[in-house]
Image (cartoon, rainbow, N blue to C red; front, top):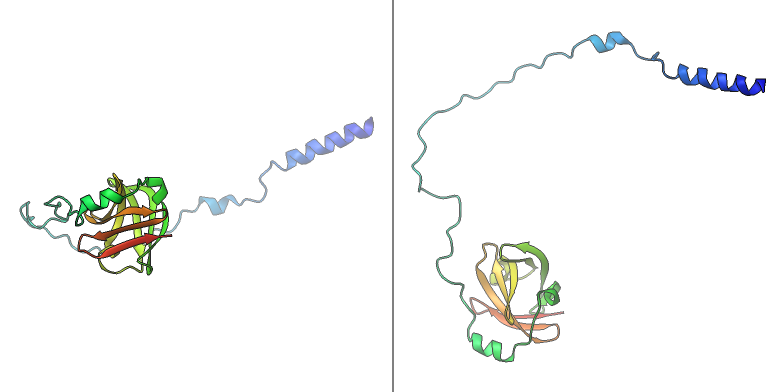
Length: 169
């Protein structure tokens, strides 16, 4: 039993010895850091601001309703039902570039974009499902085109400028 008490005592002494601060030099903590040197500051100018109503930093709001593609009635007659969830992912546009559609909210629609496309589709920033059509919009929310479902994994339509659009997977 004596050995047990001796080992316990040694353990207590060693643990208390570890609590002492012997490695710090208090002189190094008492000195203050050197002050920073001042930097030159340019002079401040004063003057009158231009009156409000001048050039705005914000883009002008769309003045008219978004242009609808030609013959919207013809599209609705043979268009298949489409859901937002079925559109999500990567699509091949006109066999030459890619369109990416996500469910991330952006304005009234969802975020989308293109890679390698030409024409109006380069400005695509969002999309939304409206009835049996998928509306393609630019980053300002203006409609730049629409497509409708013609078959599984196949959509057809056109841009507002008349450029044909086919989406396929």
